[in-house]
Image 1: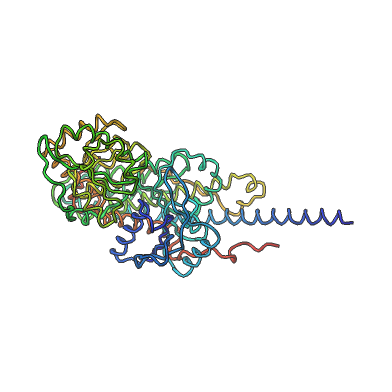
Image 2: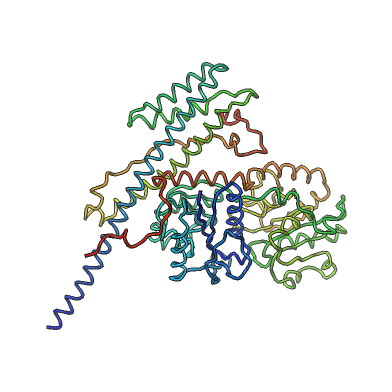
Length: 188
Length: 389
């Protein structure tokens, strides 16, 4: 019965390839979801750091400009305390509050550099998070993943939909030859 | 921070990506980081101490230029060994979509991977056909950097996903203090004299040398003493064929200039001309000319306009008559040249390597944080694959 062996061997090879493919795909699904989780944690940390930097800036501005400082302080607190479903809006409000700060005089405001850096880092964390969430959601939509329920063990990651938090480049503290002019950033 | 950088192109050959990688590595080392660069290079050639050579490269035609690449099982083994012994906190690959060491490294690595995209490939057929395979590479990259707005647009439109824009840098201090070559640039007064510069592979059509040559041929008879300084590899006889014999002694070919001589060449001319007809995504040479304090005249390309940001004169692509007019006007107008050079110094400060290297480090930190933090980049080994049968 050589024919039967022949077909048996073929079936075994095909089965092996299918098993290899599925296990590889399961690994890919798992890896993307783990990365999405880690990126979410990093994004959360970046959001908290920006809110903290903004609160510090509000304290520093308070003596000279009490009204805008109070607004900024409230926005920072709202961002930290926001419930999960209101967090995107609260973070956008904080970005808006930072951009709306009135032009300041020539006195240096040390906390400003911290806010600019934290905002830029938040921009990076947001970028990384969006990319990996997109990849994870794309792999969930693949037919074999859906048919075999390979993503069942992993909760679907979700986008964190906020506007670009990066403040104006002119305020970048890393640009030594151009004097730092925080007023330009706030006018933008 | 321990940083592993992969350069896809051979360090034995000059090129934008290679220079970028070496300048970045040196700027990072100056900031106190430990850097190892894996690149195709001849093991017996002179190499900076931070470079790990990965063997000789084979020439491959790509995107209108000849690229030298290293790919295959032997290279894959070298990449794995380098990753394994490196213990890097972050892996930084350049041009991961070329079949090269970069692609191999992304494939083998786990943990934080940062990728820099240099080329602005607009709708390449290869890219569309290989979308599935590229997606597999892409999803192993934690954070992406694009060196230009155009390169970033390609990311967003064709690949889905964003990229942080960090431009190519230039070591401003090295350019600003370079000495001009002896006898250059010579006198330049209204109506006479002046030196024009061009640097690049002048035989390559998209570099646009013929446009500058034709403009020079128009301008030189009317302007005694006008000279043209050309640096870069190419066929000199071919380049001179369209120049009247009487003007031959006013064109100087330096041949290929070594990296340290580039600033000297750029400081040896009154006007640097970038007549490229297209295909440029950034315009590195413009930032270098700006750093050297030389006034720039460039083709009105989107990429060039962004880089110059008001620090140079633009002319319509491929138009020698318009170029000749701009050159004649600027050579007559010393204050205008000085104003362009002053604006250039302001603009180029944003491209200084120490400044950009800090921004790259921020991307590294974000990538490390986004992958859980603390785990070094390890090479993928078989123990991670699920048990089969």
